[in-house]
Amino acid sequence: MKTIKEYIKSYKYPAKYYYNPNIEDWMEMNHIEKITEDIQYDFERIMWNPFKGPKYNIWIENVVYENINNSYDPDELYQKLVNKFNVSNGIYAETNSNVKSFTFDIDNENLINDEEFKSLLNFYNYYVSFCEKRNNKYQVYIEPYKPEDKTDYIYNDCEGIVYRFVDDNGLKRIENHGLAPRHDKDRYYPRYIFVIADKDESRLKDTFSKVQREIKKNNLHLIKIDLNKYENKLRFYVDPASVNYDAFITREYIPKYCCEEI
Image: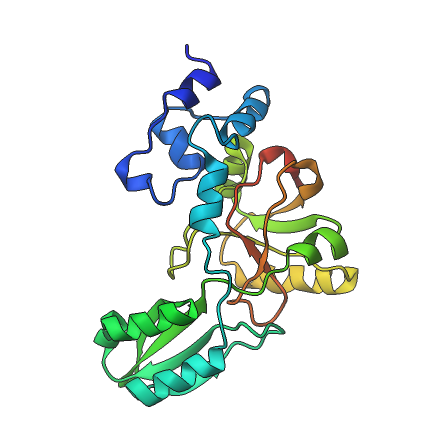
């Protein structure tokens, strides 16, 4: 049986994972069913080493956090969309962030594939997450690639403690390999992990109740995530799709030893 170091040293990214690999992809390609506590440490030391293995830390810097550092003014972007493409009925998400998601109506759904339309969104660092037919119109959902950064808030004000609800399958994944960024099944988002945090305990409990009501799954488990146990400092952003409470996302892996069911 190969050691974990032998697995990682011989690993090559397959084409379908090259631009966005994560720990689950790595496990699948190397036929590893579960990362035990014994090999977790070696896994991290090699994956985050710039001279060994798949150079995960370089991928994080160059792909997840590329040099386009911000998403820009959504009001200005929307006005340009109105003037150039005649979109209508713009509605902004009700969040405390200046970098917001928003929706608008269009007559022809083919607009979202128009190169000039996509170029304008890219210029402001936004993307289309969803498009659905509403009566005689199509409603388009626009999201920022780079929502407002809340890393300092998470680590300083919230003391590095965040929370997440998972179902039975999610709990098994955590027990096997921790939390890996995943795609949303209903809408397009870059791979992410959704978490809840608040420095105010009463608001946090209120958020727990709101999130539970939104999740349409049975047997939910509340996971407490202690980021202080992890040597890598992760980046967190405002979740632009959360409109009734404060929530956050990260696009980086969280080891299972940081996670505890409470």
